[in-house]
Length: 186
Image (cartoon, rainbow, N blue to C red; front, side, top):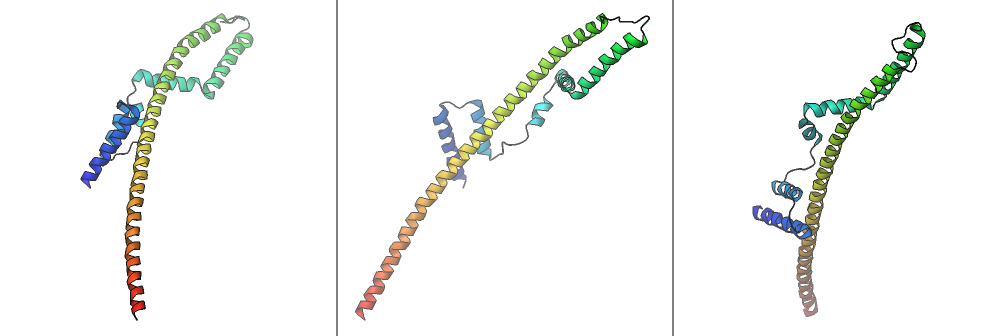
């Protein structure tokens, strides 16, 4: 069994080398998984999230909050409250009169800070997507190689089974011929 597994691994390695020419890092990972008989389809989300720095985690949280309905509704409520306070409640002496210059400054500062934070989060998401795609490729490559190997095993079994059936058929024919000779001699 060990010898069979050894030649199986060598055969799969040559298949990959023939298709690609040179083994890439991803292909080497797949070959190691085949050699160790390990599973590639583990959950990689935990691996990706454990490597995050504090800044990346903060950027992800800010971007997820900044793109939520909670943020939109609360910010819209803040704007309406700001305008109402300055127009009706403080109509004699508002702290930010009608063109709302202070509000515009706050909105500009918020946009200036929020844009790079969202871009950082998008870059993180792109890295996650790239790692997921690489992981999916590894799983697909391993599955393809395993399917190819199973197909060849089935072909091998069919050939040997056909040989055995022919041998059995020859024995049966010999047996029938002997029976026929015995019947003719009686």
